[in-house]
Each structure stands twice: as C-alpha cells, then as structure tokens.
Length: 506
Image 1 (tube, rainbow, N blue to C red):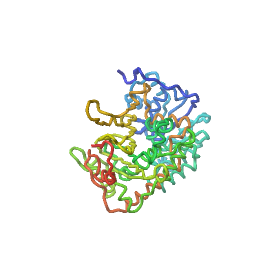
Image 2: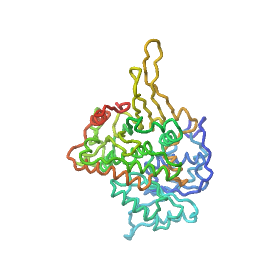
Image 3: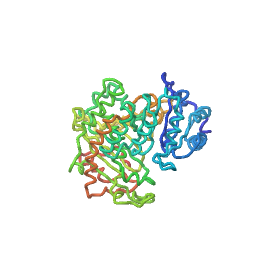
Image 4: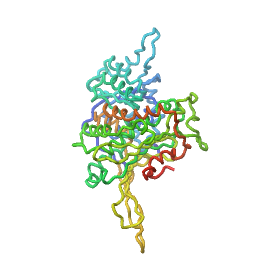
C-alpha cells in the first residue's frame, strides 16, 4: 500500500472553530528537526483541518533553494515518513511551502551585511500584516537573540506575531537569562513559546486528566500513600556525530533541566483552580521553587553520573565517530545521570523523586512510575505494593499494577497483575505526535504546554549547583558498559533506602 493511500479506522477530530490564517516561518527549515518532525506534524494538521486556508510554511535556510526545489526535497524526504496519507492533502500541503535563502552573519561582496535574505522574507510577508506570524527558531540558542533583532529591524514583528524557541535554552542560569533578555527585548512574554516536545505527548496530557478528572486518585496522591516516584528517559542510541554538542551539554543539561523536571512538575503540582493557560504554569513553577537544593557534599550522595564505555560491538562515548578527537572535556561529560530529588511542601514531604536518563541503555523507554506504600497490614503472604506506570514511549499508555489471587484451590497465592490502558488499542483516533499537538497550540496561540520564563530560570537555579560541583570535582563519571543498565551507583542510589528501579532496564 502506498504511504499516502487512505487508511481505514482513523477518525479525524473536528476542525477547531477559530482557525486563523498564519505564516509559519521556520529558521533551519531544511534541517533534521524540520524534515523529521515539524513538516510531518504540519501535514497531519492540514489533513485534519487545523491549518486555515491560506496558511503558509516558509523555510529559511542556507540551501539556496527555490520554492519548487524545496517542495521537491520535502516530497522526496518527508512523504515516505507519513503513513496513511492522502494524496490530495499532500498536494495541497506542498503548495503551502516556500523557501527563502538566508545566511545569518554572512557578508555581502562590498563588506556590508548581506540583507538579501531578510529583504526576500519581507517581500514574501508584505501585504499579509493581518495574519498571525509564527517565527520558529529551530536553530542553536546562540542565534535566538540575533534572529529576533533582525526580525525587528526588518519590521516583521507585529502584535499578532509569536516566536518559538527550541531547547536547550542556555547552558546555565546566566546564559538562559541572557537569551530571555534578548528575545524579551523584541517579543512580549505572551508571544514567546519555549517548546519541550515531552509536554506534547498524549500520556503527559493524560496525566493531568487522570489526576484532576478522576475522584479516586487525588485522596491518595500524597506522602501518606505514595512511597516514591521514578521518572526515567532511557535511550538505546549513543552520540555518533554529536559528541561536539554533547561535550558541552551532557545528560543533565540535555534531558534533566527540561524534560524530566517538566514531568516532575506535572506529577507533583497542586490542582489548579481552573483549566487555564496560566493557572497550570503557576502550579508548575511552585513545584520547581519547592525543590530542595542539592549542594556541596550532598551532590555526591544524591546524584550519580556515568559515561558509557566500549562493550562488544558498541563503541564507548570517547570512541564514537566525531569530527574532532576527544578532549579532557569529553572525558568528564556525563552520558547518564540519576538524581534523588525532594519537594519541600506538605503534599510531598519525605517522598523521594528519582530521576534517571542515559544513552546506550538496553531499552528505549520513557515513563513515570508512582510507587505506593505497602498495605498497613497484609493477611496474605507474598504481596507487593501497587504501582501506577505512565508510559510515554515507545507505546503510550497507563498501567496500574494491583494484587490478585492466582486461580486454584488451596492456599491463597497472590500475583501482581496490570490493569492496562493502551491508547493505540483503546482509541480509534490516530494518536498525534508530540510536535503536532504543540505546533497546533502555537498556531492557536495557546501557551499552556510551553515553558514560561520563570519556569526555565527556576529549573536552572536548581540544576546549577549540581553542575558547579561536578565541574569542580576531580572525579570522572562512573563508566558503564554500552548496552548495560547504567552505572552501579544508580542502583545504589535507591538500594540505600531499600528501593529498586522499576522493571530494571537490563
């Protein structure tokens, strides 16, 4: 079957009542993120009626492409990534695409700045000032301020403009504040959308529904009934070709500061007074502000960092293909980290939150595990505490582990069994990709699932002391074999309190 043939059994949601015509300008529009995630997400939005007639997608890159060149590139590279597509919609979608060549920092032959790209973008947008304008910066954070200043200098920022910032937003609190200041000098906070694709996942949104639309959970969602919480984002891939980036990022900056802390916030936040764009973000900030700082000697007790080494046919981090040989910084960077975090408030006092992420692990899985306390007094032998598992990937769903009696005569024998909600099996509608949901929210002007400035900076305030202690230490990350479940220290982190990771990755 052709990837663009019709697909039975897929129910498209109704188009929103207020779909605004928009110009979506993607800086880095021919890059990997755009071709793998953004353009497929926009196609699905078009197919489901969420792109208003006349909406255009304008890719900005150094490619020197014409509109037709760009459409041909997208047709060749993106079409096969879309299962169950519609040929008529695909043709309509390609007609929305445009390309403008730009080289930020490039110089004209006379020694002046090359303005041709900005002039071409201005000409393309001219006469459409009544449209929403979304500027998506799928580019390195160091370019955010420069892009925004150029947009303002070209007169392209209107009251109906929005700007989307990809992570990572800085490498510490000071750099994040600088980027926020530079972007904030051009755009109001209400116009700035800091994207974290984890927040677009269906399970993450269902976490809020599970907590705040079901009466049975809220009474036990606290330290009286919950023993601990685990949040894991494990990857099987390494960093081939990306060591230059990872040397300066590491797992703590790349995954914990944004993805894992956002999941922690949604798990631990208080019920907002209403389903309001700011009320939810207000509660998330309170969680970040309540995190107990980890400083000085506590960093060694409550954090673990590791780096994968060669194992079998899998290379170590220092052996991964890269354009430059490894440096001293390469030897010090963590490809794995585990942290014990605590939240200082009445609901969560005494409940540890364990965060874990790493490269070259045995399985690719992202999940939140809520471990409940054991029953106060068990009359049956062999029971284990209940667990609620929210799986973000690879198969999104919710699983509640309860105790049940094994069939048979004689003594009662207990067995843990799961009550499972699989989104793929339960709902006939296609489950949208995270970027699809977030892009549609950007176009609708809905900031609920995006990070506010105070969220980003509160997260960095908690992360910075850990980074500073690691950087000042002479101790290198603990080695772990590629393909293993991570360094031994990660297991000791839980074992010290008689706990263990849920469904060990090995």
